Length: 186
Image 1 (spheres, rainbow, N blue to C red):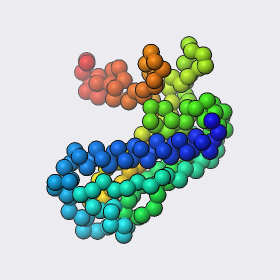
Image 2: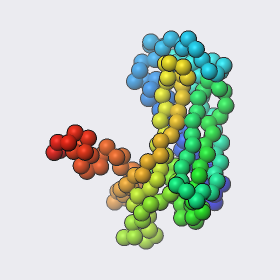
Image 3: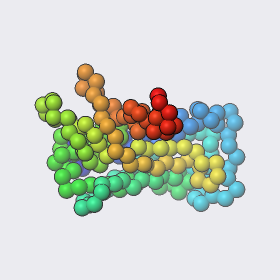
Image 4: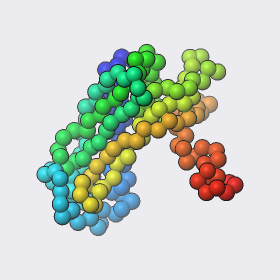
């Protein structure tokens, strides 16, 4: 896979996560039946951004990437109220094109991958065992911004099904996470 194709795949994954997050928030909060009142102060002028009664349209994302000699990262913030498409900025290592994009690891389990931190060498070809990935969060902010989304970068373990499907293990699902949070044995 070429870098441009990897960026396109990342954009599609981000938009899918935003759409799913907005739909989940809309359903869980019951906004179709009981819309939230529009905020008293709004930063943007795009009305759909503050209408909780419907899930807004999410246009295709613009994705840019640059090389960094520092820790790989991703900047993503999307607010419907401004009327602009989602914009994703990746900062990746020089090896990203060869080690992540080319073999098709730009998106794992629906999340953009910024770096492969550890490899599973027990299979041929090798596959990621731990990745730095972006988790996209989307919701409705009743205070000011309305429909919005952003990303949080996490280092996550990758597990593989016998059929070869990848899953990301969230920090709170790691063995011992309950003990670390509560100080009690699980």
